[in-house]
Length: 631
Image (tube, rainbow, N blue to C red; front, side):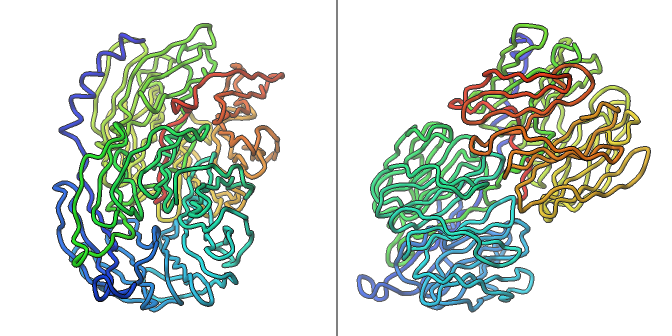
């Protein structure tokens, strides 16, 4: 297997330069004193930086703000067409058109707006009013008007973040040292979580192992909170005066903490310090680009770029304090995307052709695959380039009964396949800019997986059939409503059917190749349900199923209408569902991969349980790809 993989390694690396994605623009909120060196407030500018040339493209005057800590004070719309900026003294939000780099709307909000967050459906904007009668203003982004207000009932608030996959908003309270949890459906505070002293920035990751990070400025710590239980897992000591915290876009890589003089990078597994990178004076905020390969840091007098593979500063762009002000907050175009994982992302497959699924992990740091073969022994080899955002997409592309190792390069839309019987294939099928996610499956029933992508921006399925010809059809609501593609043979005719799980409502939408359209309500976003794919009753038809992260329960709706519920997993360990037929009896088995330890736990349908260790979390081993983005 090492030999077959090596054939494409040189080709994969050689294509990296030619297919590099376009560099984003950075929008930096600059706060000026008026007059310079005088009052702690004044005209605020947004400095637009071309990150390809590391040069200032233009400066956009917005409102008036204080020269304060506002690490979450600016954000980008999902499509990159608008930037939203808080003006703390004016009590307004400025809306910038990124095509013209001009202010197209100024929205009055509450007192002292300090942070802004975009709802995961993209249709609403939340603005934290952190002074006086603290509240959150809810803005309709289509009309740029306030359509609701959520009272907070606390003294001072500073940071805010939105959950990328469920209706939750998190607000750090500057005055009461707590984190408020808001249900964005009912518009009410539903929990208050104690954190450290003077909390500022907040960030939250997606995926089954989701967690919240809160930077505590005076405690010199970061509070880690489990999303499912709202319980504090750790108050981790960090450097002096942390003022911004960010998960990597692919959050299994870990998180970054901005302190008074450096960026500290921490492991997502055990919280250990990986690297410390010194930055410029009085840093205020930071933001990853969409790949996570670069981190942009806004300092008092410069914007610096950190290469997150080498952990080194590769660019420093000086700012003029009189013209640009102190860089307080930063956002990028396109904005980082929070991954939401669907069952098509699993690396598990039958690689030895014995009818049993083989536990497999993909090493996110190196692009290595590790297969634990059910026939005995294991396979390990390198196939993929993590720096180019390769997504594992194993499937039986040649119809020999064995899964082939394959990756989809999300940065370019390319596919690389290493066939189990020998030989390789390269193809371009998909767009890196239109939100395409790989959804390979046997759509034409010839026994071979077809190359296919689901285009989240337009709800299109674009399929290259192995039997010949192409198919392009619109089905689902796309990323705007949180649809996650889950193709499978739901009607038992041997052909994969189009299907999506709507993560914002818990609805399933399927179009059977033999039975036509079908809809089911099966899942609850409030309880953090995620879709699971498998034929759990062995009738040759895939069942509708979800794994409830809030309780570690499985809920299965069989094709005959039978309902089953099983408890399998552990909430506290953030287990990842990895259902598959591991014992070869034709039924999918309940199984979880323990992200924090690398352990697998299986409840076999034929009877008995099985557990073993296969994976090194510190090296970012995972049994799945990089997820389907809702942002």
